[in-house]
Image (cartoon, rainbow, N blue to C red; front, side, top):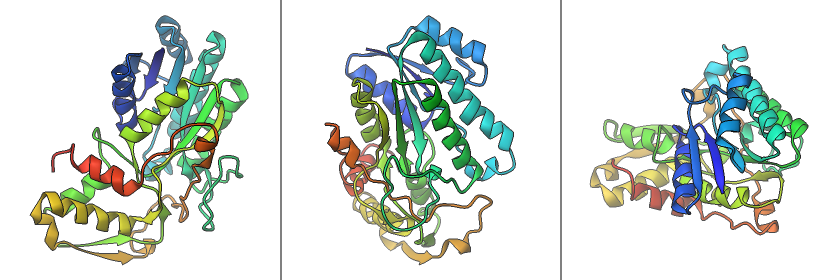
Length: 287
């Protein structure tokens, strides 16, 4: 199988290319320099030349707060860029995976979101990812929309690395406890996405590691596990605070719980618990 992966320099794109290659597939990883997704002509040219069996589209504007002041720039990447790829895939009759987010929902309630629940974004980033989903759905029949959340990986910045870095200079931290979701390891996601792209079980999916927690609970577990590897983290204390303690330009969802049941319903393997994923992750990064 030959697969073109956008956003190769990001956490997820990096792991997907590695997973494809490890399984003996041909992977074309492209970043902004290799393919400007906002340029329709460039997109069609690159995809035509690569002649892949599928495209996994990871590239996105993900600076949530910055998007509030750069609406059109964010939309150009997340909507126009996605539409350009979807149209190129349509011309060549190839399948596409679009990586989306829990931010397409309004984050209310406590029930885990189902793939076909009503989409009602709270902020510009979420709105553009929703419009990106529509661009895929309106142009293709051979598509997978896979929503992810709270990701951490070896390549790039993430919450785990931030906590570990802060732990080296602070004995006490405060972390919000009124936003709930599922921390998710990009290595696990990559393995799942390669399984999905090789299938014809099209539609919307949610894909996260199993289990729910708050950012505060996630931070506590990070330091608990990190202390088993490096004793300097044993003395760190973490207190929970309301998200109002950290005002942000973009409103965040309080409920980022997502149901992964559709994965198993379609024969895909569920991901391990987020605690197990964190344990494996800490063993492969330097801190």
